[in-house]
Structure formats: structure tokens, C-alpha cells
Length: 399
View 1 (cartoon, one colour):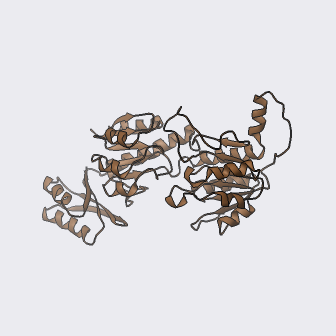
View 2 (cartoon, rainbow, N blue to C red):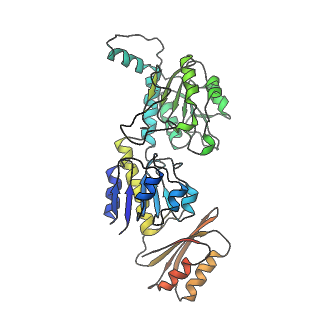
View 3 (cartoon, rainbow, N blue to C red):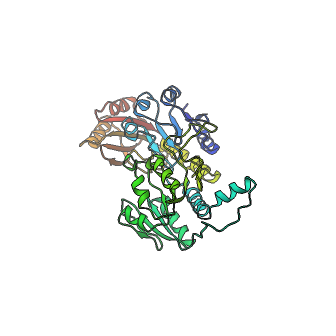
């Protein structure tokens, strides 16, 4: 019986899909720390997490049964991907499933900040009728600066143009500009022209501290700032000073450097209590539609990896797209990518009289992944010989 552990309040469909595959599933509502996770992974083959649970090298070293990790979110910086790969553990995420939800939140917050709706709302709840146009603006005709032009940034770009905004984007990689969006050659160029700046960068270590006092100072006076990407990319103390000085007119923040592990835990930030600041608890992708889509997508990837060996869209293993086995036996051999491995695999099969029906190989850096289908029954000695190869990281036999 294969076993799965799903953490952090995943959508029920994530569990249902795995159960339908005959997998025994345990669910827990919150995140686990390193020691708790090591203990919980005893005898577990699949792990499902979101952003709060960290899968470190020590965790994977102490989880010999673990075959795959599903990150039910976009980011994977909470997983030591290299350590997992070199112990034969595949990792999958959901790079597209919550894109629309994040984009809609960003647009809603841009409009709310431009109209200063948070202050109007607060006044009425306090019993004060504060009807005024002071500081309130339409977003039409204003310039939106998007930092990070990936799946979220590009969709935001298109919808923002539909609202009448001019879009400028900055990305460290070459990206195709959609619609009438214009690429800025530097971040400074974007900051000089944008009325609203929104961050949609990934969680790579190089993005830490991307935005601080220097960048806020270069933004246009009375502009708006949003961060719906990663908490560690922004110096929030510097943002606080920019808001209090009046240089930044408003901000919306969905992510923080240190976030509570579960719903109901205490939260604190230097941004609490500031005027025209929207704080949300990392809910950019937290809609029912997005979470259901993520649950289907990631659990589907985990199921396919178990049953077919397919690594399509894996974030840490060479990618192979594989169909069902059609009754044949299948060897999925993850190995160190050194010369002669494929020849050695085939020589081993030939020495044991095994006929190869089909074979696919993919490599990625120092890793290789070869999947071989063979006709007829397979002697256990064949498995033992392949597993004993010096370059073997993990061998799985599927049928």
C-alpha cells in the first residue's frame, strides 16, 4: 500500500484523486517543522505541501521511502530541489493553476488603493462620513510597472491594458511583450515612469532584497506599490518609511518574510496600522477555483509519476512524457549523467535475455532519466543488477 501525507489545508480534490488511485492518504491542517516532518514521513511515499512546510536536505536524507513531493502552489523555494533529485525524489508544482486568482487580486488592490477605498471604509466603520475626492484617482491612463513578466505578470499586463492602463515591464530574461506593453531595459527605467509598481518575481535566492530604500526613492512621488510574490524580496521597514513620508501613496502586501504556520496564529508587521495599506495573509492564489485546479493538477502529476514514470513539468528531474504501460514491464532508472550509462543498462538487459520494446532518455545537468519497456516477465536478478550500477540513484519497476 502506497501512502501519502498532505499538509496545509489542501483542497479535498487533492486527496480524492490519490485515494481513487488506491493510495492511503493522511491529511493535516497546518505546516510541520523539520523534526515533525521527518517523524511524519516514516513509511510515506508521497508528500503534499504548500509554502509553509520546508523540505530540507536533512528531511530527504531521513525519508528513504519518499518518491515524490507535490508543491500545491507556484513556488518551490521551500524544497531543496537538488537534494531531493539526488535521492531520487521527484518534485512537482502548479505553475499556472492560480494565475488568474493572483491577477484578479492585484487588479482589485490597484483600484482600491488608487481610490483610497481602505480609508473611506475605515471612516464609515468608525461612524464618520468622509465623502471626498481628495487623493482618489482612476487607473485609466496611468502607467503600471510590472517587475517579473512570467505567467502572472503577462496576464496582468493584458487585463491592465483592458482597463486603459499603459504597461511597462522589467524581467531579467528576454520575454515577448503582449499587447502594447513595453519592455524596460532596467528596473530604474521602470521606476522612473510607473505610477504603480507591482512585483511578480519568483523565489530564487538572487531576488532576496530586490526592493529596498533605494528603489522606493526612485519611484515617482505618490505612486502605489504591490508585492504579491515573495516576502523576502522587499525591505518592509523601508516601505514603512516611504509611506509615512508620503512618497508612497499606498501599498498592498500579500507576502511576508516570516509568516505564521497556520490559520489563527498571531501576526505582526511594521506595516500594520498604516494609512492606505492593504495587508492580506498570502491569499493571492486562495480562491476555491484556484485551489481545486491546483489540487487536480499536482495530484495528477504525482499519480502519473507513480503509475507511468512520467516526469512532465517536474521541477527537479529530466522531463519525459509517458503514456500507460499497456501491460508491459517498465524500468524507470534515474542515474548520474555520465558517459555510457545507457549502454550499460542495455547491456545488462541483454545479458539477462530481456528484449527492449521501447526506450526514452532525457538528461538535465548531472542527472539522467531513462525509461525502458520490455516484453515478458522480468527476473528479479535484472532489477538487482540495474539497481547495483554505480551510477544508479533510484530504480523503479512499473507494470
